[in-house]
Amino acid sequence: MKRIVLILAILGLGLVCMQQRSYADKKMSHAEYAKTAIKDCNDCHKGEGVAPNHDSDFVRGHRVLASKAGNNCSQCHSQSWCLDCHQGGGNGEDLNQSNARRDYEPKSHRSGWLQIHPIKAQDNQQSCYRCHDEKYCVACHSKLPQAGLESKGFVSHRSTTTDQSWASDHGREARRNLQACQTCHEDGSVCKNCHSAQGGGGGVNPHPSGFKASNYNSRSNSKVCLQCHLPGTF
Amino acid sequence: MICKRFFCLLVGVTVVLASTFAWSAEIHGTSSTQYGWFTDVFSGNKQAEFGEYLNLSITKIDTDGKLSIQGYGRVTEDVLNGNGDNGRLYYLYADYSNLYDKVDLRFGRQYVNYEAGSALIDGGKIDLKSVGPIAFSVMGGRNVIFGLDGEASEMRSFAFGAGAYLAGFKNTDAEISYFMKFDNDGLARDQIGGTFKQYFNSFKFYANTRFDLPSETFTELLTGIKYFPTSDLVLTTEWYQSYPVFDSTSIYSIFAVDRYQEALIKADYTINDMLSVNAGYTREFFGEGNDGSDVIGVGCRIRPMPNLLVNLNFDRNNGYGGNLSGGGADVTYTPIKPLEVAAGIEYDVYVFDRTTGDETARRYWLGGKYKLTKNTSASVRVEDDDNAQYKNDWKGRVVFNYDF
Image (cartoon, rainbow over all chains, first blue to last red; front, side, top):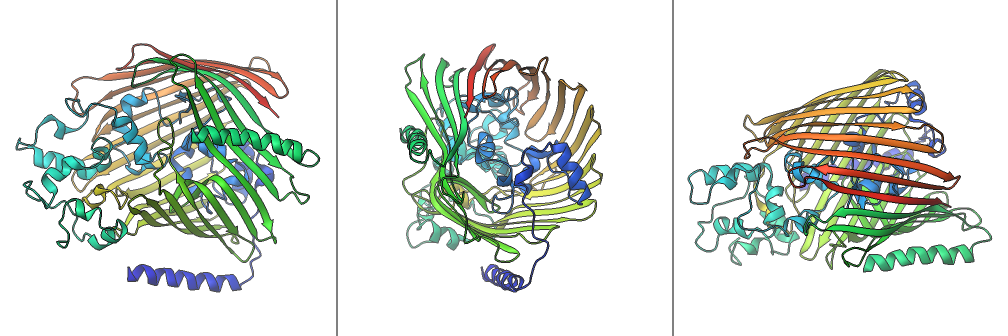
């Protein structure tokens, strides 16, 4: 924590120093080019030494472009342009755009998205949460039956907790995609059966090495810790 | 219900301001009246709804033109199963720009995006600019979270953030920001984000990261280079790593997790006005073992005639978590200026680790749009999904748009 404070202090000092100098090359506003064809943008950008930025990789890579506290995009796009994909909406003008219920379905959600999303969700675990809160996933998965459900794609779900392979299989899969566990086992009660320090589950330690317990204790007002530990024991 | 009230507020704002500021304000937007039908995945019932989507922009309210109001929302009514109405207010905010030529103010429901985190908030955002090469931003308010049919926000869902970014260097972009989120149980998320972009003559170097304060871990780290010897050719190479991160108030935040990494190379080449192609390869690494996945993707864009556009793309993901191969093709044709017709197919073949055989998912769609007058248009889009869950699942929309 001290290192972070130190880094921030140095950055802050740097900012103060930079504020003192004049700056001739002020960034130009692109607002007046909002309706320019992308091809014309690229021609100009290349001449200025700026990479063309609305290429075929835009869907995956635009998060780097959406910088300057969101002010980069807003010069040309209204918020609906972002939210049609990130939060929903859509005026139906784009014939290429499918609907998911009442809102546009992002183009990254191809064909039978309900069927293939378990595979996609195992790529970069951060991708889903750029648009969806975990509550969104739970809203669907909580409606599914919790018993007897065939969970595709998880080796650990082929066996039960009494099988020898259970410990290694579920541990490996949970470490790689814990967010998938959360979508169905929202409150983690099934995890606590074995990992809680209370009760007869054995108290198998689930924490990573170098676990910063005090950080979570203070932020959750001890509520997270008290789910598995008795007061005064952590 | 809350969203429906907000939507009524959006309409009310339009009417009131239209009458109050009619002498000066400009009101523009799009009214989209839609009839849509789809299958409810939980009940299996076909649902049909009428909806009104309203996108609104009111400018030149004051004499200096600094104040504007922006709004966007929808309300729908089920007409088949009696499921009632549904609404969502995406944003409705007042924007006051260039106060003392240095401050931008924005209050109301709005989408805020910092490198450290993004949120839809009912609150305010203040930007301080033109005070040097660094500009500053601060925001805060109620954190609005959409669930399936309504808001899923908790009673004490709040989000706050602050950022500073370079605004005075022609070839350099940088931002550092802080984002925090509260829920009913306390401080759920607090993280620092940063991004950096440096432009050279034919190179662009960029990096982007998020640092999670509770776990004291860089949860995301991306570095990349784009090389563009001409404006028609862009070569990209990237390395990315991430750790799953959870709300500090969730039991899942205390579990050990593995690192995910990926390395990517990609080429994007516009051969001429008629043809552009792209291809990429990504190697994904899961955990510290040997498990990985290879992802290749290719695509092209063909415009044989000025009024005909064809898009083709294919990707193949082979490795940990299952195999997935598929792609899409679509064609857009404009036979006469007011008419646009389009059709496409999406096709995926996939196999989960657990299943013994391949499954397929197919989507066929067809659409048409006709510009009736300068500011009105009508469109239809129909699609059929054929997959493991549905043999033929028809859904679509009929739209009438009015630009004002």
